[in-house]
Image (cartoon, rainbow, N blue to C red; front, side, top):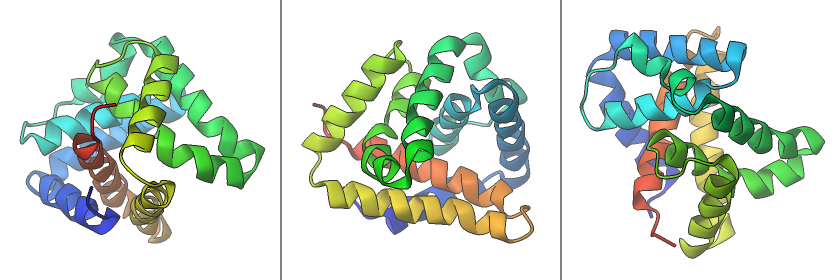
Length: 175
């Protein structure tokens, strides 16, 4: 697997091809994330579609609302809980569980718990924990940097980070 910076570059290359449209679609997806809790799977769906060179539509931002919304919410809750308990469990589990979202978005897994278990197994098979932690930290930092710039930059950097995670998922070996 490559480093986080390489995946961020790949995400940026995909994002800039149709920047305005992509920003609008990811903005709608992030709003659904805040309102309904299903937007993160929709954002990974959009990230994968964008990386494949397909044009995004507003309907893509709402993809998880019509495709297994309950499992999307369960995965998001399980992913966030370790970060709220204490940062350390989140930093341990987050880099291993992040790949559950692309699995749900690509419908490789229909059940959130099964996706999380598969994500953790594939992450362990892909090498050391530190590799995933560094990648998770770098891509998370890329996503957060835009938020520091009056929040507006996050409309570009968050999708770039998501596309980086999606690209990293493609490089994970099958468990």
